[in-house]
Amino acid sequence: MKNPSPAAAILPFQPTLCPALLVVLGNGDYQAFEARLRRIDQLLLLSGVEKSFVEQCLVRFDRQFPAAKTQALVRHQRHSYRALRCNVLRGLLGEDYRGLSRRRAEGPLFRWFCGLEELAAVRVPGKSTLQAYAHWLPAETMRPIIEQLIPAAHQPARASVLELAHGLELETVWLDTTCLKTNIHFPVAWVLLGDAGRTLMKATRLIRAHGLKPRLAAPEDFLKAMNRLSIQMPHARRARDSKKQRQKILRLMKQQVKVVAGHARRHRARLAQEWAQTDWTRPQAEQVLRRMDGVLALLLQVQKQVHERSIGARRLDNADKVLSLYETDTRGIVRGKAGGEVEFGNTLLLAEQRDGVIVDWQLHRNSAPADARQLAESLERMEKAHGIGTIRALGADRGFSSATNQTLLEAQGIYDGICPKNPARRKERMTEEQFVTMQRRRSQTEGRIAIFKNGFMERPLRAKGHEHREQAVTWQVLPHNLWVLARLEQKQAMALAA
Image (tube, rainbow, N blue to C red; front, side):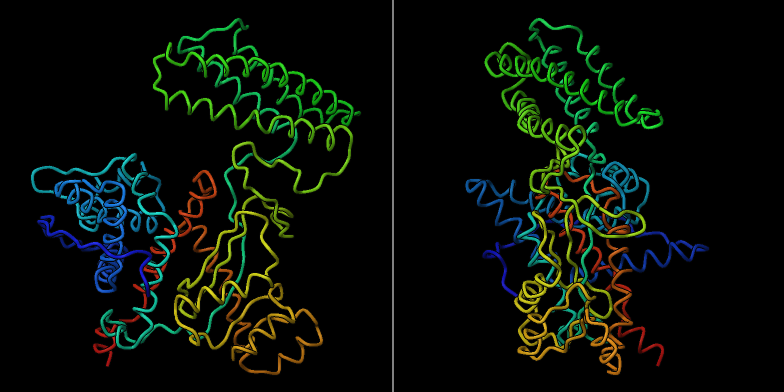
């Protein structure tokens, strides 16, 4: 396993002094959780993941601040240790930043795991610090560190270091895709217009509150008018001539948004020229300008989309559709499920091995290729991370089935456990014992996806922008894999059973 950049030397420092944890009796769930957390602490140390993480943090810090003093390096090193532990704990608990800060203040077990001092006073990081920890390393740097954990458990010589009863098996993997939903409003025409009007008018009101006041009626009047139209829209569905009523309301919303956009452009130009007359700094003013520019840039496209689809009843290509004014990388994914024919988000590919450890993942920014076309890239990533020839069998649903993939797996000597699309071919393959076993096991991959999305990712995922969502996915793979490995049988437990 190669690190993304040369490692930096870890500076010596005084370990955090914490009192011994009290023994808790009478609650088996707490005792099991404490044992699991102690095991995860052990895995982080023995696998070298924590050491590699801190080294990469120091490398990045040295590049950003080459003239930094030793005291600053030691301080950044301490924060790096805590960033890793805090992010792992947040994934295990499924808490937001504010909730995690409060729970660590309450529980000595969590403070011990994160290495927080408790001698003179209890000091825990606040929600803003925890949010900074969540972006401590980018996804491309975190991926090799996470992948380092898998060969540490796979190789027999290393498995003894991690005190596993058996080495992690990587010969058989299962693939599946899912939709990672973005935190957006349902993308219908009138909702997009309402979002545009409210965002622009709130930014306008903010500019006026800080001293720049071109001639304009009260911004609250525009907000009330837009909200009133938004309330009328769902009620118009019950009317006898509902289609005409809804089109009439949409035309009024278009007119209202046009007026709001004109006022917003004047205030935006005034702020760009006279920001020094406000009490804002230049970065604060640019933040407001970017917020307005993002909506104004898409407004014409949204107005055209509303007219073509909702008023003219004409179809638009998916590439021309705007699904969100704020999350522009959102894609409509046809899933055909009972809970929803279409889901809005990005396609996430996951690959797991027999015990449930995630060995590959990929979050697509643009419209994802068909499942069958993702297999070759996933296989290449797994071979690069875990070694060529490690994988001996691969299973997936019929979406991954294709003649190209069948030829690829045959050429690399990998058993094809993908469910065929042809019913006759599927019936023929059901006579193979290994194929039947892999297909039965494939149903557990659906459960693995649910565990990862519902148990370790936020619901909904509040990270904004594709880069941050990709970073959140990569970060949460680490606590998930640590949680799975901590549940595996250890040598000590096996020796006691014998």
